[in-house]
Image (cartoon, rainbow, N blue to C red):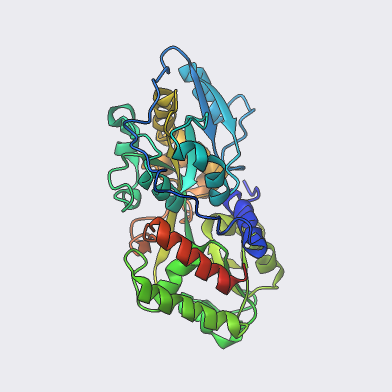
Length: 387
């Protein structure tokens, strides 16, 4: 179970993109004509006559698919649907660049499902590039989705999206080398941490907390508040307090003692703790960022019915527990914790997989951005982080 983190690994690629300046801020192609009406840009669903499903997901994000008892193989046996499963979502921005011309002009991307992080899911839904799910075909989703993941601002009724796995963005520190770091403000200002701190290279992860630090609400803010937050970050960077902006590189440096504390993803820290119990994960005083990677059916998918069977299957608590035991991220499915008792009791009380409602009471998300805001904010972020 202590496999290399999927999200950490690929965010590492995102960190390299900022350093190279190639992927973080893609040229904004003309989106005026790219917005679609999903009702008019759809294909005939041939699920009943063609038992196939094409899925694009992130690497290292499903239990080994070649095993006879894997969740994917069991799905195929139970439904008769053959799954063409690809791990070609290497980075949200990179994937967007790969499919934007087709989706923006109502052409097929030859996939029935793509799995994207909240902010990118919000973007493609806003552009009209995603088909609404048939609510009656995914009853497990609406019955078993945990409460904190309901009512997202960008998809309030989960009309278009279903979380695959979720996680937390918070603070990690090495308890052998430093005392507890309780808040994000401490992380970016405490003198004894100077030069031994890293932040994440994903803009929304870091800037959500920076907005909190300056007293703004990441779920609803304006340009002035954004400016205050980016200025506060610029100050912490210019003084040398922040050592770097990274993907999962922080994991090795934190474990080795090269870092005292950092902004971190919960799934990475679970895996570090298998070998080093001195690595601690903290819910910052400002709150904790809760994110998901979401299953979406793109326009012109020809097997939407089969995709909905897949969603409903993975929202069965038995299946969800098996997936969570492999991934070690937050399981979005009610009842999976009870099933984990039978599967792997050592994971049942791990609050980074099964946080309770009190743990998630202070979670927040980052406000969906329009295309203009996205371009301006990414540019200012890149200027500060060295992209």
